[in-house]
Image 1 (tube, rainbow, N blue to C red):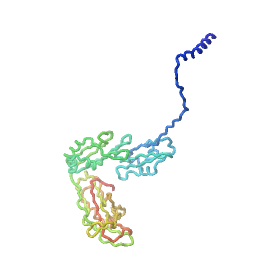
Image 2: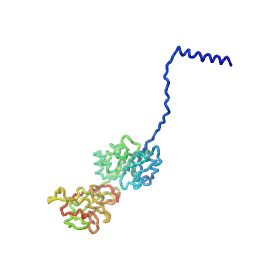
Image 3: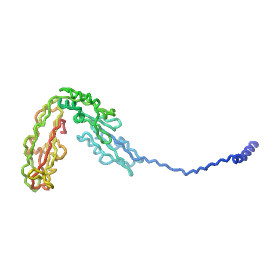
Image 4: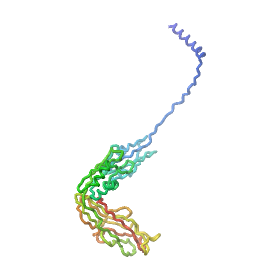
Length: 369
């Protein structure tokens, strides 16, 4: 044991001599104090698409889960107050709605889109895309024309085909085999049924919808419409002036389509030019008075809609309705309180001659009763 200890001592003494011969320079590393790295996760939320039935029962916790809301501290997470109320109200006759969503914590906000589509739509499993289209019945002449012109925009108008994106944008759906469909429509005969498949896009066929196009003979016609509606001479007074016009001719629709193939129809009216002051030649007076917002339509004599540049529904017949001749204006007037009428408040009553313009539109799709 002692000898081993001595040898060890000798070696320890000789080592500096060897280092002196083979000198090696080395920098002495400086060891910095430990640094703390903090990773903060930013508040994020993703866009999603939901069906109307899901939206009507949607809760905040469900929406948070669907949108995969993430952040450093979600203990004080809040949702914009209007989001759920808007979603729970449903589509209200629209084909889709895009609801802006704002999530917030004490120091951050995250914005996203909640897109609600019809229950008839096909939604992708990740809720980022949706597609919808509806079966439709077309007159043979319309179908043949669409086919001859390879007119997808018109076909899409009838089938209401659309592709919905989770960011709230809408695009055209892609036909699976457009050449074959248009050839079939071009040569279609009465009672033919043509199945048409729409894909989300030409490059994305992960979701699709197939609809049937039924062909029939017969027609839907705009038989007549008032060319002039005259309110006559009205007196200024210290209360609202309410008056119903006289018509040059009735508003009449004729439908000769088969009831089993009938798509229904809807009549609309809009104010393309508000009532404004004009001179003796009928030319609008610069800086003249206006009766904008005083022309109304009532279908039932109780509820009314103020006419504007947007279409207001006048009358609608559902799919499968019996054909015939429909005189829409026969019961309009002061007795029933139905139809078009003026309701001018005192503040807009100025002695002058006024002139405006209305546009009637007949669409061969059913409206909202």
